[in-house]
Structure formats: C-alpha cells, structure tokens
Length: 298
Image (cartoon, helix red, strand yellow):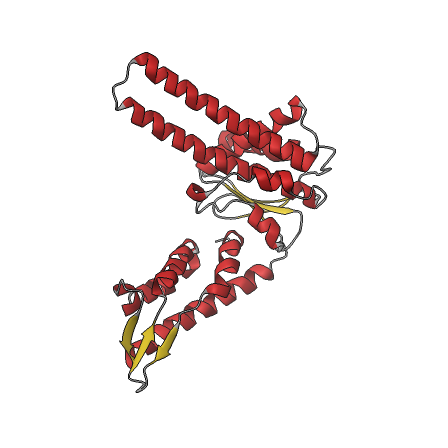
C-alpha cells in the first residue's frame, strides 16, 4: 500500500468534509442537511482504499439510505452517524500524518510515478525507455536544466520516486501530463464519433473523410498543446523541441490509458493542481491559455 498517491485527494477533502446538522428544539431529532454535497464528497473518497471499511459503515446509515438533501433522524441513530464521522475524520488525519512524515513527501523536485501493470522484463524495459523519452529528454532542455535521479521505489504495483533536479522540470512534466490527459480525452471522443459514424451506414468515401478529419483534429490539438508548452515554459519552439514534447505527451497519454500515474511530491498546492486529476479525466480541459499567460520565471 502506498499512501502518497492518495495525498491530493486527502488534502483536498479534509477541509471540506463537514456533515451539517442541528438538533430540533426538543433534542429528540437531529436534522442532517446539505446531504447531496456531502454524499458527493464521500463518493470522491472511495479512491482512498484504506478508508473503504469506514466508508462502507457510514453508507449503511440513514443519510445514505435516503436520497433527499436533508433528513431528520432520531437522536439515538444520529449518534451512530456522528461516531462513523469521527472514525472517518480520525483515520484521514492519521493517513495525512503518515504521508507528511514520509522522508519522500514534500520534496520540491520529486515525482511519484506509478507504472501500469506488466508481466515481463521486456515490458518493464519498454516502460523504462518510454519514461526516458517522456521525462528525461524534455527536462534536459537548457531552459529547464533538469536531470533524472531515481531515488526510491515501492512495493505493490511498481512505483518509482524520481527526482528531477529543479522545480522548473516538475512544472514542465506537469504541463506534459496535463496535455497528455487532454489528448487522451480528445482521442477517446474522436474514437466514439467514428464508431457512431460507422453505425450510420455511410459510404466508404464519407466515412474515410470523417476519419481523416478526426486524425487532423487530433494532430492540431497535439501541435497546439506542444507549442503552448514550448512557448510558455521553454521560451522557444523549434521543430525538434515540438517533436520531443509531442512524443512525451503521446507516451504519457498511453501510460495514463493503461493505468499509470505521474504526481508531484511537493506540498506546493499550485504545482499539485497543475497535474491532472486522474480520477476525473473526462472533465479535463486544455490549459493552453493558462500556460501562455503564466509567469515563465516561476
């Protein structure tokens, strides 16, 4: 079990995990309100596997058996709900303390890299070469001056802790990961559109035109994302640089598609937010405007 991969979710949810309630004037009932928001927060917590047992106990209570935004519960049953909440809050606090005391957590230049599942050394070697192309080559740009140093590994699915040497290198990889997630989403949408077009029994020429148009659109998106990264973070956009960035985005998009993740270990919230939320990739949007208008010196 690796806790670091849950850090973003835990740090985001802990401050807003509030169950709004008040007693009736006779204290025989307790009214829980804003439950739709609360249920959504609990649903977001389900990705944190160590919390599964306590979350399941909470889901057996009346606030989850009801679908309304507010519910009135007898005081005796309300105490059970309160105790479940105390249990969840205490376990979240414990997990956060364990994460924060890790010798790896908080390093400004460190990445957490979880590889997709594999079964052979050949697959491991391929992922290693892919990561070299996707991470090591881009950050050696003179505008970044980064370098890769694998400082640790973890059990379970293969997890690497990779130091990049500079914060600028982490920001570049964040941008590449974000663009890769955008490309993954757009590629999925294009595939769905093509599959739908096939059901319309179009003539071959018409279907080929649609497929070609989707390929062109995906190429234009990749070009735009790479140019935005080059101009915003590297301050140059020569063809070789653009080609390297596009290769990095393509590799990381494939890693994400197979279940891989790349996350920062820093406590800096701005950098944490600059990496995609891998649990909500269908909601991601291009950050080209933010990259182009951002401070290149930060």
